[in-house]
Length: 368
Ligand SMILES: NC(=O)C1=CN([C@@H]2O[C@H](COP(=O)(O)OP(=O)(O)OC[C@H]3O[C@@H](n4cnc5c(N)ncnc54)[C@H](OP(=O)(O)O)[C@@H]3O)[C@@H](O)[C@H]2O)C=CC1
Ligand SMILES: O=C1O[C@H](COP(=O)(O)O)[C@@H](O)[C@H](O)[C@H]1O
Image: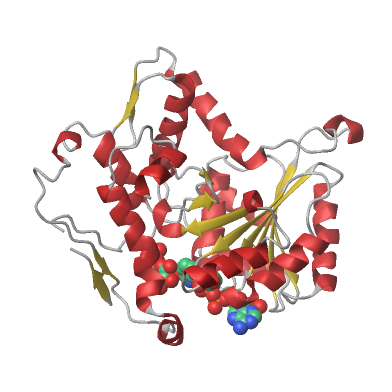
């Protein structure tokens, strides 16, 4: 399968990085779930945040190394890491934490459709990478939710097969996996059952142990059941004292009209700032590095212009067949599946004018 736009630079889909950038309505928050090279992620992600906040100058090298004019790089990096952590634990609870004597909020992440391909291939490994990198809050629980009958142990067995230590620092990886798996649980239920989501809610509460609870639902299910699941999650399992957010996987409809209709349906149960639409392609190392290559690389930056580049082609290739996706492609269309999201996003990153800053909103403004 190959889709090709016009390039002298060729991008091949041979990376298996698992990271995601979340586009949140008009705002954009970056919440990277990465399983390939957190070192690169940190440099890239943290750099932008850091530069924005401190105004300090720092340059990130291709290998993820950081050159900064700071005399105290170590503590600066710590500040940056704290910032990433704050993405996951931001928006303090509406109920005072002191009132129940539990000072730190919990995050409960429910992977809806946990028995599926995406959950196994990408989501659990990415959550593990976050855990490995200490980017999850101290108190967190992960729940798999789907119709398949499974015990906690069976879920852990399933998940453990796809967790990897493909990351730079491999120290204690096995130990970390064990710790991570102990935080994973499973609840079997229908996607349109208030009753089953109420059962999930009860289980989440047990783990939250009276702490302020923030809840994230990751919809890793076919789009035709998004709204049912959101309805049940929001009415029967949303947080009562913290935030509740939902990550929605593409496709977001099949055209502008159906996309608007999906948003309208979701907004019956959620505010726009609770909805995070995801294009996992934007979190790939190769794609993230594109901005670094364009804007921080002293050799390429001045040459990246129509004066010096004659032809640009993007090649999307996979070294395997449709692998069970034939029905989906026939129904939805391969162009819709790949080109109008992943490849257009890459094209935009490649061709946009220099944004005012590398802050996500400024990049978005240049893209559109
Ligand atoms: N796989 C990938 O690489 C990518 C997938 N996506 C999107 O992410 C979402 C999930 O993808 P993926 O995991 O591949 O999907 P799957 O088809 O594997 O579905 C995930 C789970 O949803 C449940 N399910 C499947 N079909 C139905 C149905 N008709 N009615 C009710 N439940 C159903 C099944 O769980 P159970 O039977 O246990 O309830 C299944 O394990 C989809 O929207 C897909 O388009 C986006 C990008 C990449
Ligand atoms: O969204 C999709 O992307 C994958 C390619 O992503 P990768 O991370 O596996 O390289 C594609 O195979 C799939 O058809 C499509 O739905």
